Image (cartoon, rainbow, N blue to C red):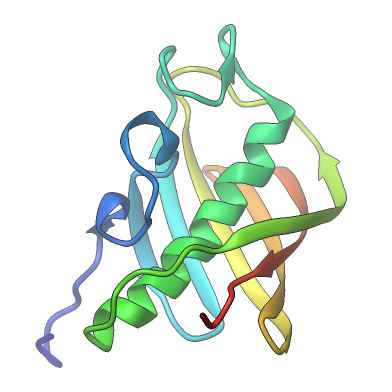
Length: 144
């Protein structure tokens, strides 16, 4: 990577092991060892839509994939292959308002703690500056 040029945004399909419609975020906008920001524009055909609205479970999946893209970017920078991670828990999710087809969402995750192969992250899903949902994730990434 060039140290003088930002690699962002990056197509999320380069950073996640998910394929086809199972890759639910579109772009990683920024990433560090402790935080990441991703984006998706919802279409009526998006795999997480329930009718013309984003399914509530979809907010959790968007946050989990953003966490995965953060890890994928770190591996990509090191020239290492992608690893599968597993969402093992979602806590304290609060849904403030629903998202609809045509909305462009920003997904932010922040690493709160790591214990071995398990990470705890906080997440926020926004439409422009409006907070739509927030909560915590537990993700397991086996060392293999």
